[in-house]
Length: 429
Image (cartoon, rainbow, N blue to C red; front, side, top):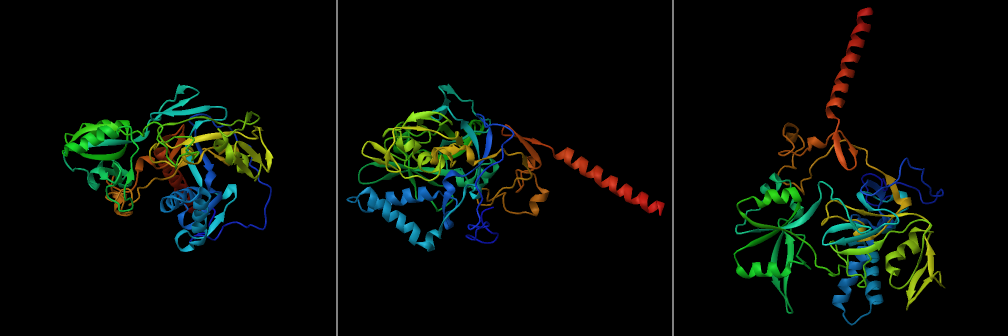
């Protein structure tokens, strides 16, 4: 909805004619565990050839690369070099463009925490205001699957409805300083291996020292993990969790002051309209983008020593002007959500998903069953491209309810009615 069809960068809207930004009042309020459609907060700036990746995360990743290549430099130098690389290397990144709020990509996630809540994630368990949050039915995590035989194939993954893009192998890598465990894709050559800051690292190192066990990392629901554990070729299935205080630079607020990761996060207070808090060095990076971008237009906000400056003036206390939310995907170890880019402002909320017309598999995820459009018309959803159970469904609390048969029955009834009516007119004439 932001780009003209068959183009990568031609905007579908005019920049020279702008009306004041507003949204019509909604028919309800966002509550905990609601499925919400919203405009992607990090989508205000986009590198056209990498539209599925946060522009800000690209800058952070390149800044880390610059730091590795030039360890004697400063952060400002590394960051500037990264910024210049993205903006000047048009062949790799494409032009960098800005987008208004209503023309940013639509995301669909589960609202975990609403304004005024305090969120904490401990060992992959989510707590809201100190209480354990009920888990969604189809919640997915990464699980380590230990086996003495190399049995995971594309066909096996397809039979178990596991995407090949979410299937990894764990291997041992020895560098100059340490023995590292790395996770790399089973069937794709796009991943050279990601070091694992795991709570189970010692146990896995013992596994590799025995030289008699293979370790996969698969994205599974708890129910599917139990099913896989019953396979006679599987020795053990273990939930993957990152280690406590293991800093992940891709996790909000992207500063070593907060050693957070996917499975250990917070505590984080979610801003509420009309509430005032003290702004200090300790919470500056949590609320920086709210102050500089989301809440009241664009402002210059910076941390200078221990002082927070707001348009050049010292800022000690701030009153939030709108509510904010914290969104998470049910695919907990493979979801770009608020753990990556922080809060979702109220004025970014679009609504709730209401109806699913159709659902298909993509060949990159399901290379076995996700190929043929035509042949799949005569196959069940397990063997073919179409997920028939997700056709013509309305959405309620994140669950799908099929209306296929009422829809088909009404369609047939209407067809018979118009056919009868046409015949009746013909008989009269």
